[in-house]
Length: 87
Image (cartoon, rainbow, N blue to C red):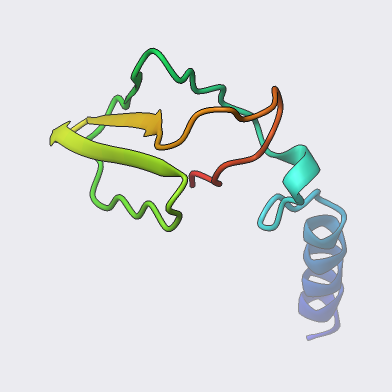
């Protein structure tokens, strides 16, 4: 019984030392640049199940199962300005 407890404690200690990636801050997210004159197309290797564009600053659609098209709705945004977060 003592050996099992020791093994469990060792495994727990080893797992707790691994880095976690569940929550990322805004600064850690990759940035995607969208152009006002060109539609940005995102193609995934697998079918995309859900698309939610929860801002009025960006329009888009899902023409086929693995593709999303995005474009800014308004003009005159500064370089690096955040319009939306895509997850």
